[in-house]
Length: 293
Image 1 (cartoon, rainbow, N blue to C red):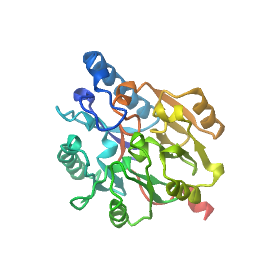
Image 2 (cartoon, rainbow, N blue to C red):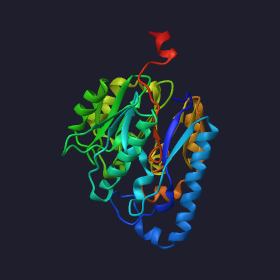
Image 3 (spheres, rainbow, N blue to C red):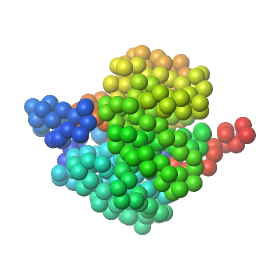
């Protein structure tokens, strides 16, 4: 496997907002000018890919499929670590057709040696991929969201599949329906998150593991701009257009922001993290962690 970060993205050629399965989805806004919206979506996706490649990443692209507009959010396709892919089971019928498509994609990636093993959730256990199970490289554990989309029963399956601790954190709002909309571990052990998206017990679990000095709280406006739904590569963070307040916070902690106008995808309730799936994550600790132990 390449030493460069490797991401999966999807061709947005069949993207639209034609149904509503989260509070952000705006079918009426899309239908007002679908051709212009689609053109903007294609441009936005290309700009996101360009930003990632500019930061040294490689991108594999999934073909568009008519009738599966949310295929553009491959973060929900699977949890991937150490070459193993635990394939998602979607809660809503509108997205369940993606399961067969992504299974074919991962089967092809396996033939190429980019993935080594495919694992399934049991029937009836919903879990929507890396959007609800985020690997924390510094702490060597998964943060796993549950509630609106993923089942609490998925936590034990994730732990068994990967052999690493799983910290379950319950999401308190349908507005922040996946963990990746409100929670972003950063290189160096810091955390960008939106506290209002979590139950008191979930916040207690976060605070028990992430000291206050390492926590960067997003405001209402910053979270609503889908800026917590971001891709982090070392000290660089790729995100939707961000309020100046957030850029200042992140700069104070040593991070720089690359902004991409992802407005067409925010109409569907997704942004930079949703639109990508990291394929090359490994659980072995970094040299920095080894040196500190």
